[in-house]
Length: 203
Image 1 (cartoon, rainbow, N blue to C red):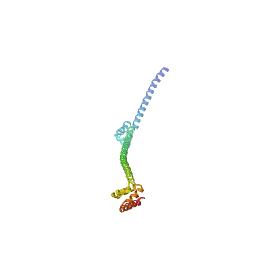
Image 2 (cartoon, one colour):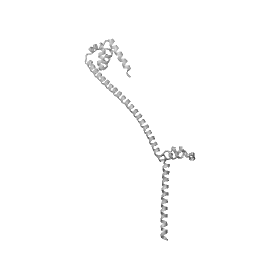
Image 3 (cartoon, one colour):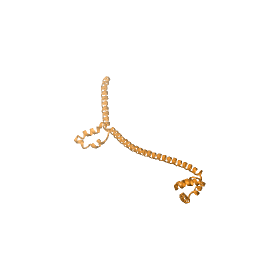
Image 4 (cartoon, one colour):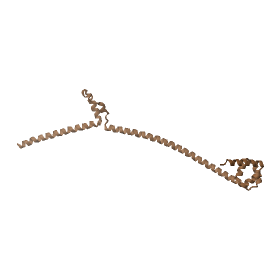
């Protein structure tokens, strides 16, 4: 009797185990399918909605717009990537514009620097010319200071008023006064008037 009971129980256990495995497999398949649909992988929501909308009874119950508008995670990532790419392109364009502005300002700065260098060079040349003229005038003054005042006056009589004033203002005061004494009275008076006017113009 016991052997018969054991033999009966063993097939029952095997049948129960098979049923359990089948049920678990079905649950697993259903869960996998639900996950695929929920996350809209392979656009399953759109496909299922499209097929269900063909059935007249179910057609009015399904909102195809809501389902079709829902994007899959991959599509969302692709949209974000496109958005980032657009932002990067915009930033690159702004950087290019700023670089152009920098290049323009750099060119202007280089031009101003070149003009400044030319101005400095011109000033240095003028200074050299002025120094050379000053040295020349000192040499001329030394000639007149070592010359007899009467002879100096005779030479200056034939020179322009400006040249006479230049010589007289370059030599020392004693030499200038002696030369003025030996100039003709009208020439001396004229030179003296110019010297007075020039003295009044000085601050």
